Length: 594
Image 1 (cartoon, rainbow, N blue to C red):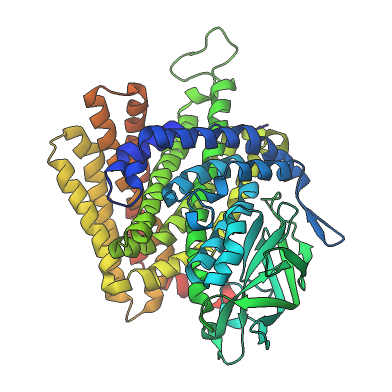
Image 2: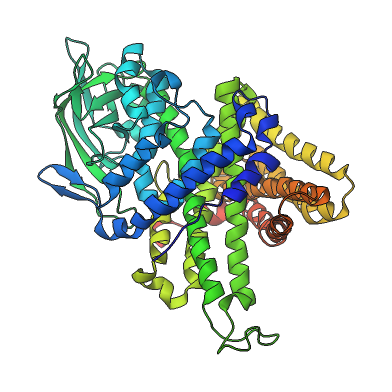
């Protein structure tokens, strides 16, 4: 049986010493003092540890089932969902006008990490609801907001996003679901959607589906797509629930992981829906939800790895195997613990350095979202748009890798379901696929995001890194410069060189750029984590110099950061070399030879 403990001390370090949230001019950040955030994180941590984590393994074994048209979630999920609602956790950053608590998104991000680490499949029910809430909040009419948002904020009603169809995933222009206008202003939707997370269940009174479909007059491709609100139960004028809509569950998918979440085939047989946003502009409205979802999935990637790492670390300290090559460290026992062996230590350090760096990057990304939404900062909006495919793609790739590495610490026991480590690997695997497979994220990064706004966001990123290095070098700390700033400088130069290669080669040979897009996404991700670790090192050194706080915590932080800069960050040179080989090694093989 696995366990989970919320890393609240590390979260506080990121919020108050790396990001210095109370010093930000972002509206609402001045209120996020240490005592306030500690109270929130401690309470969320208790729910994650005591309510959600105990249901993770049992939910994985039991899964969801469809009986007589009703989807049932695993035992204990309904009670846990009620506890989550009672604490107001789904509403933490939602608009107070509709019953939300109005806190910045970064606090939703922090609490969400704990809930994902404790039970990823469970947390998806409220996570998808938040995305649907955001889309309606951004694009809905006043009447739609009043009708749906209060119930969605409380999670009395949950939400979904319906994009994928059996014959089309990423290529939404091939969509076949139709929406026929009706005399009363509604639409009648007919078609089938697949892979719908939290598509139906017994946790809420109603499920509000956001469905992409083609209405007449929209033309071919994605330009003809509109977005519709299609509730499971129709809503009466007084807000009460009316008759069942013509939407049903055709199947609950059997999946590799996230068994506790109901992934459904949804059939729309003339279901009544209402247009959300402008006609034939559905992709714009849906991207409000998808961009939020991609950040959330990036968080899932490292949050699952955090839980896997905690269990691997405990096992490595307890499991006795072999002797340290430098002499017995447990002379009174039959063997030394696994953690004395250099390769096990390397494995654990790699996991830790990734998870803590990923947390810093994700929280920083959340702060950019807040700067853009709450503070109207266009530069922050451009930067988080650039970073979104990196956060989603890099953190989920490396998160899955870290989860597998945690499983590896257990040896053969990690392959046995009884230990629970395989669930982390199985659950983490989907994060690389859904909300835009990671190859698509890489193509989006290189094909669209680099050139956005004439390249202003990527240039701003480079200037940010240069400015940080310049300011930090001015402090005159030789260790900081040698161990953190010089590696960061070298990695940033690799990223710039890759960008220059795309500029020189991309126009005349687009395949040359796209063949290197995946490597570029990882190169960019490493530079981002390098920047985070350099910031963390500077903060830890300052805390040690001041003589305040937990000195062991800061020394451990510096050791972990040094590991990342020395052992992980040099991967940027490898990725650059691959990028510079262009398209020839990738595209020269005939299809028949593959």
